[in-house]
Length: 213
Image (cartoon, rainbow, N blue to C red; front, top):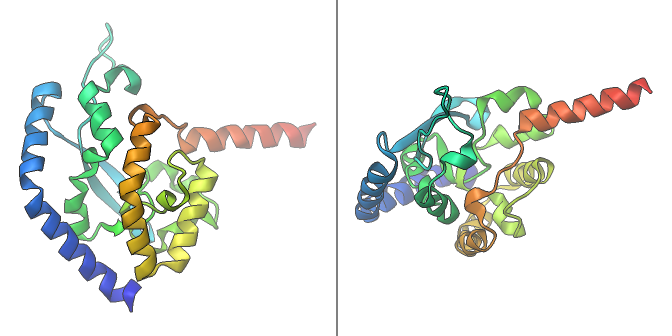
């Protein structure tokens, strides 16, 4: 009952209420981002949701459009601004995802919505994460592990997808508050993890080398 009906109605109520209450914050952040990085103020990217359905996710922009002498965008670590680091470290960059929650693309709580190009790289076990909607806040906060490996993250998410219930969601929401503080402690705003595509390709190359020796 909760997974099928109540969770969605809770998402609608929470996201709609938050958008109304946080409108002044959203407006101010949008203004500051426009002054700091220019327009557009929103970052849009295709992500994978429930049942592997593709949707466009919204976030506040955190990087400038700085380019090298040849006109190519600089690497992410050179384009993220001080304001961008602050937004990421406090998760304020994720506030526009409230629109995605209202639309039904994601939920308040769920696995992290990931890139479309990662789809071919999941194991059958890991694909279970798509049995539920992705989330604004994620299961890893329960484990005080804000910088998990891919394998750790997927294990947390599959466990959540198979055991989602009201009390678990409430616990994750409350833990998120402490998790944001921990993120600031560990400089989460500039934490960069190797893309899943790259990591799995490296693992496959190593496996091939071992099998050929």
